Amino acid sequence: MTDFLLFNKLAEMNREMTPERLFHEKGVGAYGKFNLYMPFFDYTKAGFLNNTEEPTEVFVRFSRALGRRGSSETARDIRGMSVKFFTGSGNYDLLCQNMPVFFINEAGKFPDLYAALRPVNGLSCDREKFWKFIADNPEAFHLIMWLFSNKGTIKSYRHMESFSVNTYIWRNEKNKIFYVRYHWTPLAGIKNISSQEAEFLAGYDPDALTNDLYKAIEDDIYPEYELSVQIIPENAAKEVPFDIFNKTLIWPERACPHIKVGKMTLNRLPSNFHDEVEMCYFSPSNIVPGIEIPDDEMLALMCFAHDDGWRNRRR
Image 1 (tube, rainbow, N blue to C red):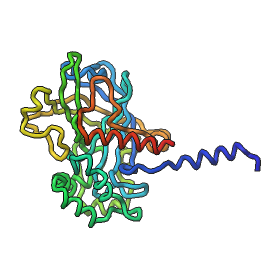
Image 2 (spheres, rainbow, N blue to C red):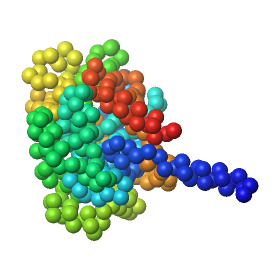
Image 3 (cartoon, one colour):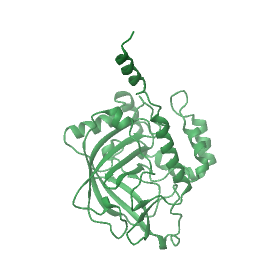
């Protein structure tokens, strides 16, 4: 055969099968806009957090942490909600999950965590390895209490709240530093389902969460989420009675009340799932002036893991 055009088409087709993500493989995405309630000049010089006149375009990817391609979306798991803000200063990625805490707080434990969560024979993780890891790392009990509540089996991505877990830095024009954590709240309300309903949907409609999101946007029932932040000034960080960087702990709302920032509305579906959802790349390292990564070993590891994973998948 000498049909080289056909050869090129087949070569492109083969290369569409990119390596899978280690986590959050199965996902769904949507575009929308973020509207700021009020400027935050006192806290950050980030342009999109100070311009109330123009909305910021966003792309959001929802996902299951351990969900492989073809798996059920309603299985008990952590869900991710990654938001990419297309700002005038570059793209800013805000990675969140529907649990306010994480398994571990030490970077050196991450490979062991992956080994405990890694699917066996393409299915679920080895339960004995998983529970042994939890028993050996009691700081993970906090997340387990959330995971095995109804928070672990959500009804819809449209009704899912999400937390940054990590602590970030905001820096204003006067070079003052503030530590922040983010929180997304669905304006349609938070809804979860029982383990029995989750198990039923796993067989009846494995893609229930994707279908729900797509149908809502197609029917002009646009999902809306409100962004709020908890803020601690740099000079007060050492005075609070907890470690502000500990990912296995939440910030008490009495000490750090939530401040409403803005509203995000999802109103458009991707036109090319592979290019826009499957190949999208999120990393905490994608920041803009006014938002910074603190000196946090665990967060630095996550930046490397996301960036290196992307280098592997785009080859």
